[in-house]
Amino acid sequence: MYILKLNPVFKDYLWGGTKLRDEYGFESDLKKLAEGWMLSCHKDGENTISNGEFAGKTLTDVIKSNPDFLGENGKKFEYFPILIKLIDAKDDLSVQVHPDNEYAMRVENEYGKTECWYILDCDEGAELIYGFNREITSEEFKEKIADNTFLETVNKVKVKKGDLFFIEAGTLHAIGKGILLAEIQQNSNTTYRVYDYGRLGADGKPRDLHVEKAIDVTNCVPPTRSTEPEGKLVSNDGYSNQLLTKCDLFNVEKVSVTTEYSGIADNTSFVSVLVTDGCGEIDNIKLNKGDSLFVPAGYGEFTVKGNAELIITRV
Image (tube, rainbow, N blue to C red; front, side, top):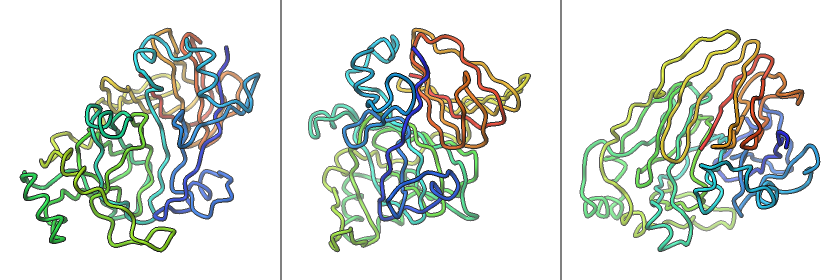
């Protein structure tokens, strides 16, 4: 058993930019790097291993052969539980919504999607859409989509570095231009577009909208959660940490290492370590900005040395 270093999978969606290449040093033949899938066993983009005896294999195959790597909590899910991305929005993303598990399994044969966003960086004045600015009925939602006035009812939020948005399934949302973020989500790729600014896809045709399904699943209410991390910043010898969010799907914290940090991967869960800034090493594996590591459940204590910003995720 050892710590697995993952090769990301990139997506070149039309709204993407170049920060993942320019600031993180990722290499790809794609012109735009809209998303980097940093921890993924999803069929639409599976990570491969870059180090050790499993080098070249997909994380999916490694876990199939070593199910204990998931831990007790991970084994409770019928699928690999989470998907972690880096997202660079040079332009506005479509306004969209994700279904819950019940609807998604019934209609799409895939689980639903609850997610969280942690703002890594943003342009001055950048904003995103997060729910509605007032409660409306599904019928009013449908009417305003039809007459192209529904943007009057959305909740627009100015963002800053360090904000945390918890996007529960059924929440209308859209990442705005000029935002770089980390997304931790359920392992699903089901998205219903409501509005796409009249843009054309790579084929020169308007991208598909999914209005009827969106109306079925959208909770047409203002958000109730704060955009601040759930926990307070705690200073320790050699590092500081802060709980970003915790739910029945994932537990996410930010760790800022100044000299040394020790964590543990016990038998309850694997640990995802995503390096969002800085450099160092984890148990003698070199770390750089943008690296993604999978620490198998049961590995025990691991140590990060250096000067680095980390997002640590467990299930």
